[in-house]
Image (cartoon, rainbow, N blue to C red):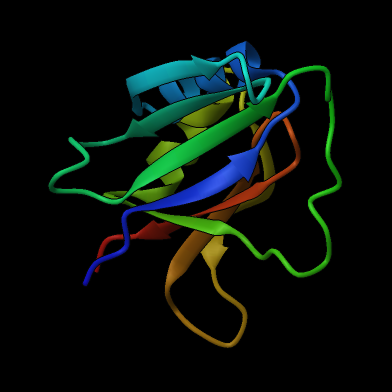
Length: 127
């Protein structure tokens, strides 16, 4: 078994694809409209689906926002250098909500960014 993908519901698919590709550097792997169900799916990631876990963005036509809820935590991305990654994300228009620095009660360097729908993404320094 392996994890295939994580799904997020998004209010503006184009804006979300732009964020994940242009700000976080993912690649749009595939996208398909489902007219009978009135939704569109887009799969993004850092590598092909057969070898990597990817992100599925679901856009339900006519729904422009969601409440991320209190049960969802965050998506974690490993980066070579958290300080450099946050600087690059800021320069691309990303919203850093926790600057790079040691985690609470630990020494791992982390930061947090939010996507256009308010979902949190944690950046964790490579060990």
